[in-house]
Every structure is written in structure tokens, then in C-alpha cells.
Length: 557
Image (cartoon, rainbow, N blue to C red; front, side, top):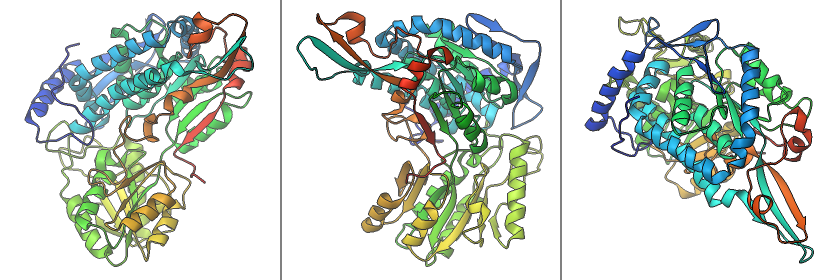
């Protein structure tokens, strides 16, 4: 694939639509991406590129007549073969040592950055992100690889000397890989949430089987391409495409899977969380969405608040686990705030996101459109006011895709379902409150606890918010997004960017050696394991370091 050297450091906060060099580079990449449309891609199982007997079509939500790619409909046997390949490759990858693994992953990160425009153009076509969102997703993936590599290096492979009871013994605490990790990734960050979790597991010494979303399989495949071109050995990373009923179910049930990362819905995530550990402890990291609040106090800069809420609610159509989907605004300034928010929302350019002037593109599929329609109908039925939006666009340019209008709802009671349930569509509800205490109580009255934001110029209000809010990533007065914008190494929580993330894909062990001073492998190498220590055939190792981490759904109590 042709490569493009990045001209600037891209993050969600630094991207600008006014950068002509960036836009020109994207135009060229988009032309090359369109030449690739409709290709058939194989699954990656060991050293084999497996085609399968059936294919499914990956169609663009911008225009459903456009086939972005075709992928095999994987079977349970394909998953079993992928797990076997990963299991066979695991000892060699583990024994390579963390320094060599980091070298490979840093090369992969550089390749992804070099190809950021090509990958981003394909992403825009595949899932409907605008140009800047797609570029940010790709570069976030590269930075996740770099961040995890830096953390492994900063911690010297997670080997720590411990105390000794006598001069004749040496004891060390080490973190070791589990074995084979399954990664089930979503459509909304199709490279960052496929590549980030996979990279963390790989750097730690595990091997990986990835199941990407069937709405975005191409980005998972392109991540695997970058790993291959960086020199990752065959079988260390495997990719199987297909439905959750077969591919996902086999990953859930296969006894040789040592751990899992899942990003998706609460319903599926909780099912996996319960069943994956049914027979014996195995680590599972599950990020299952959010219903993220923003609070606007009477002391807020309302222009700042309106822009921050608009960007966070409608960026990528609200299809982010960190999207701002409910606002609690002080009654004294509610009317003025809603007026400003409506004006900004009405000005959003909605349309084909491959065109630079369009900021908001389509939702991912027909199910999302139906969710949007039902929410609007319910809001009207229950006495709410559609302050702006409320319709699905049907003009000539948008009729071939899925384009709901950005929508602001007011007038519903704060106990209404639309303040409670995650929708993943471009609709935000605004409720009035009489005090910051009331806003905090309503914000925390949720099963979710991913992100939250506040707009206030009062230091005491900000302090109270930071002390009381029950969310993993919080923002204060953020114009670029009231509840969105995490980046590797900048915020922890969302998408595994925190310092503890790489430790979650390893297991702890204590090594005590008596006699001569230990050396070589036993003394100095963490993130390695001379035993099997994973799956059903290594239960003792799995139990020794088993832990479960559930993100997004439960409050910090």
C-alpha cells in the first residue's frame, strides 16, 4: 500500500478543518481508497489467509449501494483453528522478551501513522465518520501502541525486586501473560478499539484472536496488515470475521482462551461477563457504554457550554460510548442555554462525510435509524419538545444512506427513560434543575459511569463536582467536547488509555529462588511464562492472576 508521511501531529483536540495540507492529503487518499472498494479479504489464521465458503458484504452507511469490502462468514471451526494457531505461536512470542516485542509494536505504530490518510479514508467510507474523526481514530491507534510500549519500558517489563528472609534467597514480583486473548471490537472506533486492546495484550506477551464488528471488518484487517508489515510472527495475531452467534460464541466458550476484551452493548457484555468465568476465573475487560451527563450551572459561560455540549452530543452522530446524551442546566439560565444550543445544532452541516464541508454523517445502520425514530416519537408522546431536529433526512443526497438530523429534546421529566437509556444516536435531552446538588444527584443516578462534564466559572462548584461525580473520565469547561476527547496517556478510563491498562492483560506471580544468585530468565524477565498458564489446561495459572474489570456500566461506589 502507498504510504503518506504525516505532516502534523493529529489528535481529536488539534484537528482543524481549515488545514489545507491535511484536506488535500485526504482528497488524494480518498481517491485511492475508492479504487479499493468491493475487494474480498481473507481471514487471518496462523500463516493462512483463509477465504471461507461464504462471504458477507460490508456496505457503506453513506450510500448502501456501495460495497466497501467483502469478508468470509467465519465458523466455529475457523475460530478453533485461530485459537490453536494463537496457542502455538504464543510460547515463541512470549519468550521473545518484552524489549523485542516493543520494537515490533513501535514499528507497527509508525506504519499506521505513515498510512493515516489511506486508513482514515477507508474508515470514512466504511463507518461514516467525518474526515477529522477518522484521522483521529487512526492516529489514536498508533499512539495506543506507543503508549503501551512506553509503559512496558517505563516499568522495565514489570519486574520488581522484593524483600528476602535470608541472604541465600532472591524474590521478585513479575507480571506474566495469560496466553491467548480474544478481542471483540465495535464499529464506532473500528481501528482504535480493535488495535488498542490487541496491542496491549500483544506487548504483554499474549497472542490474540480478533473478531471485528461486522459493520467495520476492514479496519480490523488493516490493523492486522500493519502488524504483519512490522514483522509480527504468523499466528501471534489472528482475525476471524462473522456473526456473534457463531464466531463470538466460540470465543466466549473456547477453553483455550485465556482472557477477553469486549467493547459493545450492556446486554452482550453482561452475558459475556457472566458466562466467560462460569467454569473457572478468567480475566475479562468489558466496556459497555455510557449515559454521560453534562452540568451547566448558573455561573457557566453559556457560549462555551453550548459549543461543548453540541460537539460532544453530535460528534460522529452521538455514536460514542463517551457522547454527551443528557444535560442538567440551572433553571435560571436554561432558556438562554437552550437557545444557544439550538442555534449551534441547526448550523451543523449534515451529509456525505467524505466531503470536507460536512461535519456530521450517517448513523451506522437501519437499526440505529429506528432507535432514533422511536426516541423522537416517545419524546413527543410524553410531552417533550423537539427544539431542533427530530427527522430523518430524505433529500437526494441523503436518501441512499442513514442520516437522522441532530436533535435536542426539552421538557421531559428528568426521570424519563431518555435520560436513562443509552441510545447511540444524535439526540440529547436537556433537563432543568434548581441547584448543583440536584444536578449531581441526577447525574449519579445511573447504572453507567464512564464520562461526565461541567461548565462553571465558580471554583467551589468545580471542586464539588470533581469530588462528587461518579464517572471514570471527567471534564471541566471543555469547548472541544463536554464529555469526549480522551487520548492515550492523557486520560485513563475510556478505551484503556490509563497507566493500569497494560497490567490488566497480565497475571501476577512471585518468584523466589534459594541458593546461588539467580540470573537469566528466572530473575530478569517479566511478561513471560515458562508454563502454560492459560485456558482450561492451565487453570492454576489463570486462577493465580484472574481479575475482572468492567468499564462503563457500574458506578464508582
